Amino acid sequence: QLQLVESGGGLVQPGGSLRLSCGVSGSGIFVNYYRIGWFRQAPGKEREGISCITRGGITTIYADSVKGRFTISRDNAKNTVYLQMTDLKPEDTADYYCALHWGPYWNICSLVPDKESYHYWGQGTRVTVSS
Image 1 (tube, one colour):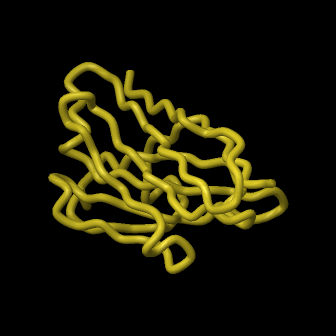
Image 2: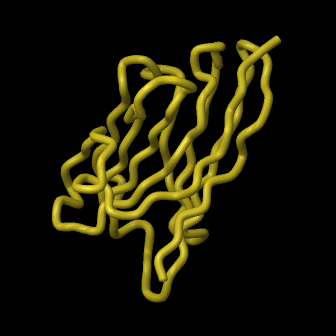
């Protein structure tokens, strides 16, 4: 069964950094084959797409709110996708989720946070940015 598990969240001061991990597991599942997205949901707000990486890492995109501060990457040997977050701000406080697009649009990035765009979702990891 395909599973995504996020980790790496926590409490960080403004200006600090965190690296989130999204471990993907399942028989015959290779993370490099799929499109992976990162999303977040702040209290009282709708879920927001913040980054995406396509099959093979050919394309990456970022929401304007995180561009220049966040970097998405993957380690195929570990079947893991990362979100490196720097210069964190209080408004980055949210639950962060990774999601996988099963197909067939592996090579087209999307930041739409619905189950038509991403078929499998993790349970989330909380990031709190506060002094």
